[in-house]
Image (cartoon, rainbow, N blue to C red; front, side, top):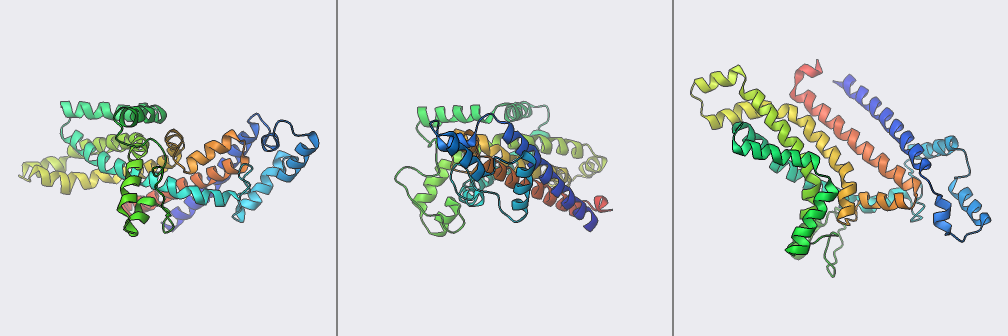
Length: 334
């Protein structure tokens, strides 16, 4: 097991290196001049040259990349061209908002996806199963930005039930200085007004962000449950008079959820990446919105820093999934 974990860690380093190289090259291929963005359209050539020199953009791409990687190894993600602040400091400010949104979306995906997958497998080829499958097809085919706009039109513009943007309503102020998660910190401080307000702001973006992963989890659970329910030992247990509820909970579900762990882990990683579109649609002040603003400003260090953080989070989640899977399935350890 230790050898497998070491191999995964080495692979993780290679993945981070490879992704950083690809994103670095792509970000520098984008048409435009960051120095011109900073200085303005009327800036002189001398001013532009000084800014390029200050940013290190006058050096060859290879040299720029190695300088960046040298800083990365020491925990330095560079300085944002747009905000003139260390990228790591900017991301630390925006990370709690993204984390809060991702966690609530993940909870929705699990709480709805697993039971829905179980029910559709039990009621296979019924109207409920067909409706569940249509629901899942929508989850993997409807773009997040389109789904977000539709929900805003219905629940904000038409019904005026839920807010359309931000983490809190205008006029509501709160300093989330404990965990950075407003819902958690407001509960810890006993401020129910802020908790309710922040929860209302979370509903729409969390639903939109969770939909695709919810559909994936549902389909995986349904498929695994159908496979397990057709096993001989399940048929034997049913023939011996074991109640259907006990059969599903204590026999089928336990075995069906093992292969689902991988999908759940990948879903959590997918939520991190998917937050970019959702945060932009709902004007959610997280890392996704931050990187979109950085792209429009050609802010290379911020784009790179965001990508590195997401990749590290994704590979760590995959490593955790592999470890859990090895614990639950001893055959893999062998």
